Length: 338
Image (cartoon, rainbow, N blue to C red; front, top):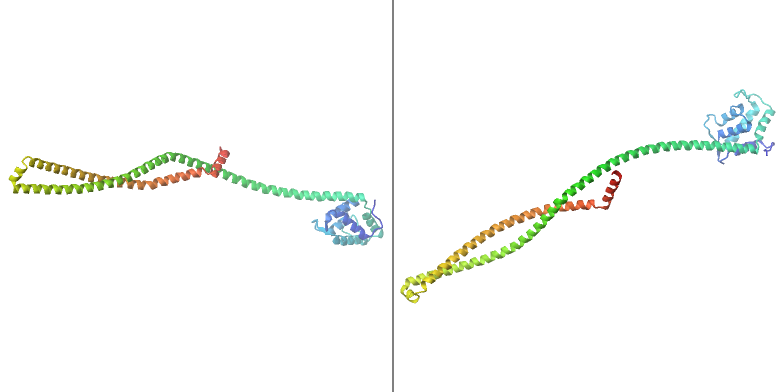
């Protein structure tokens, strides 16, 4: 079915714009109009009439967008030029007079569009726009590909550096484990020594208490010996004085007991001297023992902080290596690099 042959010039221009505006936008690329007229007339855009229209719509060949108002005015002007000057097909730039017959031929050229021709052009226009969109998409894909390639190279570099860091960390962890294993035996010895020192310190505390009690006993015993010595000396002096004053009475009263009594006094004095000597030796030994205990106690107190510090350090290392996240990292490194 054909369009009406007696439709007005404005109607033909509006129909042309609507046919070319397949996406129903406010403006249409100039090349779409030229392509449409090429398909309808069977001439390419090098034809004098189409070339003139092309120059009027898009002089710089930038495929500008032409809205309805601009297209209508340009087409009116183009039809008027064709009517007034009658451009020759062999001389595109030379304008001459034309007849009403040529104008009618030009109008008939536009009005002879069939529905089938419209459908064919719509398909071609859509294909042209799809090709344009596809070309744009290809350019975008190329750009994205270049960008992703650069990012991939950066990521590969980062992964390489991460692998080196992981290997270094794995070596450090292995060395730390070896050091910890080598510290286990000294730690056991330190713990044993610390326990022994604690027992020794407790024993020394008990010995100090016993030593204090012994000192008190020795002091009391010394006082008793001194008191006994004083009594014996007094008794001996009294006996001598009594004998010197009344020798006959002593010999008559105690003929058999005076000499044993003197021997008894001598024996007591000897025992007293022996006991006093023993007490002095005990006191000297106690003083030496007190000095030794003080030295050992000082050594214990100076050694205890060192042992406690090492014990705390090793416990912290054990706790660090037993952390879940640390164990998980080590397992991941072993899985990746072993």
